[in-house]
Image 1 (cartoon, helix red, strand yellow):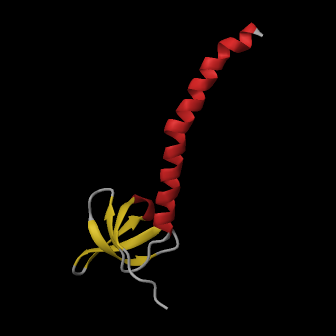
Image 2: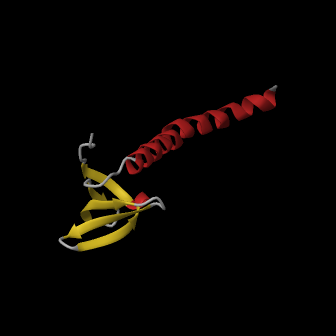
Image 3: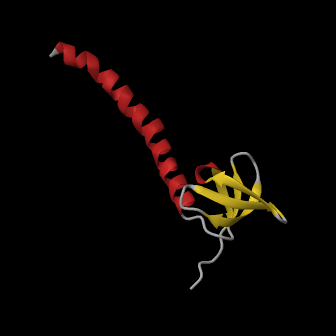
Length: 92
């Protein structure tokens, strides 16, 4: 019984670390994944590299085409989108 009591503080430390560090990180990752999945043509986005542009095309293979200036389109991986500045209204 005494051996188990020595491990209780260690178990509590792991539980606290899980709820303070791991859970929020998992929640943030899920929110980012949902944001990326909701990207559509016309959305204004910022990439992790700091490029600001408008989504021109969403491809099935995990890439999107972003127009960063008139006539300048770049292909980026969807997961590198940091934020969506403005969303377009869905067409009916």
